[in-house]
Length: 288
Image (cartoon, rainbow, N blue to C red; front, top):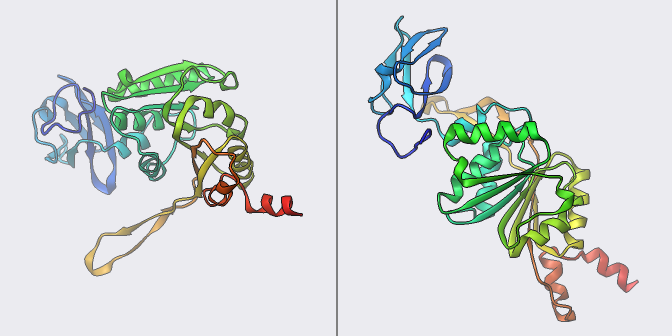
């Protein structure tokens, strides 16, 4: 497996990371007789293969590095890309909020460069399955290469299609929709999800969120939540703890919802309002 987070020692064929001074890092695949050339010297792969992860090593000119397994966040941030990728701060929250885990069947529309696809494939494990839709062949080709690089391609089925035509699957556990106009496809998403299934989309502007909220109500989704995540790091120096000079602020608005099967019984109206399936403002207009 090219990326094997459960291994203890570096092996040929695995993805490795070297971290040097000023956090300069390199992610590459270890190969027998290979070498990594950097501006701080050359490191031969044969000298790295077999070492425990976390070992400090040196280039041929004495520059220090640590040999590590790249984290999932490292891999996603360094992906070759032709589109804007999702940030790990958003991806982690999406996976937890939608309860993505081993054995699940998850649909993604808008593969892009494959960052979310990789995260989903990792989360569903070997017993799960990810179906990823994309309408651009060049995007899909790059995403497929990125999946192969980390060894997760067997967990993903790629489909090339304009999603206005709908989806082949039904009763999916969760659906992540990463397109500019998700509000145009909520009906198709509902048909692909199981009752109670999870939905999420990420949008950069208020206008898109507003249209999506209306579409979710129209197509009988509830438990609607909208949020954004702001990430601030701190300098880990005990005697001078303070925020770093930069932070990852607005990257997009996350919209979550779940497919429901509502009753027409009037006694359920109040609960429908509480879970976001209908608007209290709509109630007021009806009373007028």
